[in-house]
Image 1 (cartoon, one colour):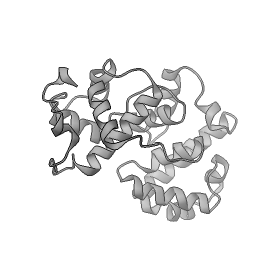
Image 2: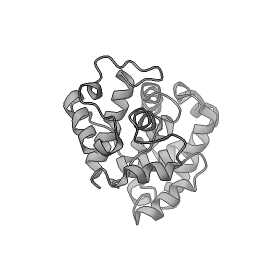
Image 3: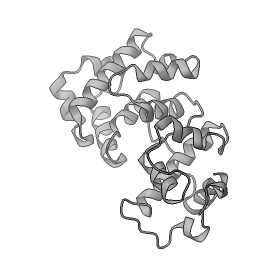
Image 4: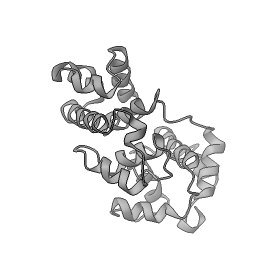
Length: 214
């Protein structure tokens, strides 16, 4: 897996993720990017910021219709609006500071996030990694696609089983895991698409045909 990371880093360079201005905005971005491309989530983030609604208090206070309108570019706005309000309310209940809300043992914080309707494993891990700095792997559709096409996963594994398959192959370092996730996303944007565009893919120049070679 370190070979895969090094190959992608050499090919694409550092990605500088997550592109959020502060802990709360980064957490909001993790919710908004569910089921959509980051460019769409980024439009919704920008709308919230421009409207002065980028704080837990403002998200709780803002009217439902106004919030729906602001986050419309991200899609699934009814569900995401509900999740953002629930997340904001939980943060307020623990003092109003996102970092404080995410403080504590990693498993406890993860359980706290998963208790919020609309936050699943992938979103919880994105928040843990990019906001709380917890070294955790995000098992999203992009990572599964690359791993299955290169024989590291068979397909159909649960989230936790897939994460465990990678767990010992990368260092427990939040900066490395954050960069790794961003590089996998970039790979899938350019080459490892739903319909693969393999010509020029850096993984073809250095084949990864067996799991043990990753």
